[in-house]
Length: 196
Length: 254
Image 1 (cartoon, rainbow over the protein chains, first blue to last red):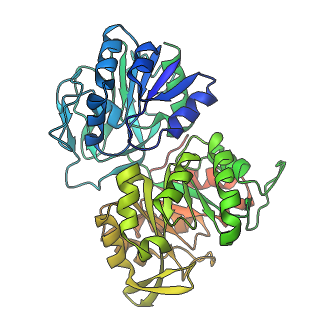
Image 2 (cartoon, rainbow over the protein chains, first blue to last red):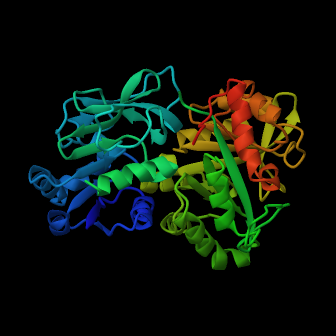
Image 3 (cartoon, each protein chain N blue to C red):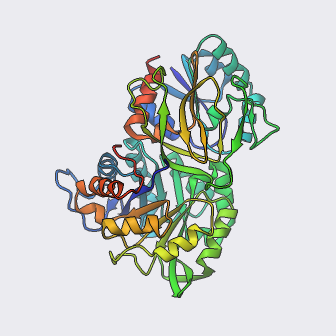
């Protein structure tokens, strides 16, 4: 059972629908007990970084942290990936999970923001999440803040400079784009996560 | 590189796609779910479903249509037409839309943009502007399907929509809509240079060259068309390949 974590921000229908399409059992939940029992965790995200504060208030943050420590595969999507870092300039008072160093920053002034649309990414051949996906594949992005490049980076995107499109460390994964909205390639990535 | 988007629009009346459709091999030529899937398979970067039903028919069919269409669609999916309240928007999102498009209701109550953005994120709110040229460099916004002048300059309204939290502008030239004579590149450029959010150009698509012009001269981030994609499945993929060969960044192969 995959738990899709609901912290009251945005619309989780699309992520649920993608797992349904892949015939993977999933539930949308904001219950820390369900999170503790899940075989895999997905933290979607649309909207503002401040909304992730609800994770700490509800006890979900601790449940996620403990599950990751036990080796439960975790996938953060968009703001869900940004939450894996120390924090974001978008809401400096809201701490992230701090699995990865650095703070997410706004795009520089010379490019339009948000970064909306299909962009190509450079993929590390060793990535588990991108198994079978060609380098320079296109994925759908929509975000105003971006994560820094770290040792955990497995995919780079260029928009007003290079930024992290995906991270991977042990059983913890994050993607800045929306695999649930990126056609066949996005579904393949989600299937790879399900197969872990 | 961030690509320019080609968006296929389905005009839906009482649950059926309208406008000249000549797809072959379809069980049901006017079914929005089947058409959306075909457009997606042939390379559309996004699908917009615009409900043009009379108000009394709308509630009964729209949500079911959105649900059926969304089920097998894994590219961004925008739904517009008659959404007036946060609750109505919420129902459309729950049925599977990724973004909603609002027009008359946003002009009547601009706080609606902020209310929906606060709940679903700015990326989920597309403000549609129907603009008609009044002189060489001015365009007026219209409401009620282009029947009533809104009393607003289109550029000013686009800036206000951005300031209130809109994620994208869907800009339709009323002068060009349905003419197949090309997008209004001057209008598109004027709006694109007035805001920092993406601008989707609409109205007037008739040839590959028209798309090329609106991306280059019009500075559009995306271009939307309806009827020209209904003449054959292959045309959308051909359009993308030709634009790519002319140096326009496209998602191809998909």
